[in-house]
Amino acid sequence: GSGRGRDSAAASPESRGGGALRDRTQLKAGLSVRHRVFGPGIIAKVAGDGIEILFGETNMKSLSVAMCLNKGLLEPID
Image (cartoon, rainbow, N blue to C red; front, side):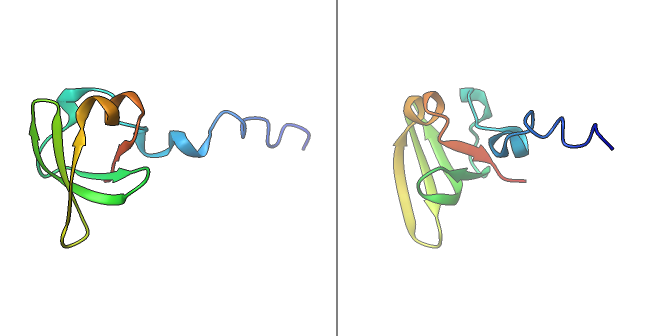
């Protein structure tokens, strides 16, 4: 059994679930996402460089699309 565990370094925890959203075309109203800081939410609106995401029942945040994409802050939730 000397070959066990050899591939474990290739699969980092961040690579699970397809990874961060990097393309503006992936951002659509109604999409469930997880923000690195704010946690799970649902995209309410995308307009220009602004994106509105509802976190929880009442916490609506207006964020920069460029910032979210460039820093990899959003991941899709299945």
